Length: 134
Image (cartoon, rainbow, N blue to C red):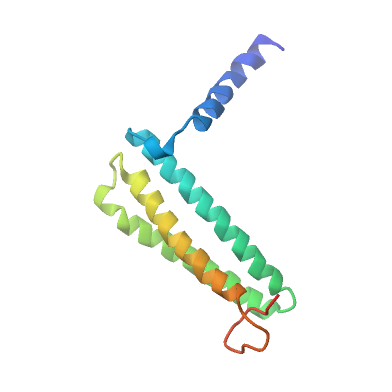
């Protein structure tokens, strides 16, 4: 392997090891706490996407409802981002901002996941539920 390529890849190798070694349960410095909060928000976002795709799949035969779901989700994302900017505004510009913001994103996203999961519990014939049963 050419030396230039090895040198170019070195930071990536160390980054991978640094992420693998992060102990979020015992985070003791702000940078690590920020990183861990970011990882938690990414995990919550992944759960959200999973549930959203399940609902989207059930709406395959109903393009109007699918369009409403997309609109609702976009509006919710706007709300979530604005809410969390507000929630973290007390520490804006500080080293804690990423942690406070990400923690809010995680909390609000988890609440949305639970709300969307309720749609997956719709039973056939429930006219008050916009998502057909499985």
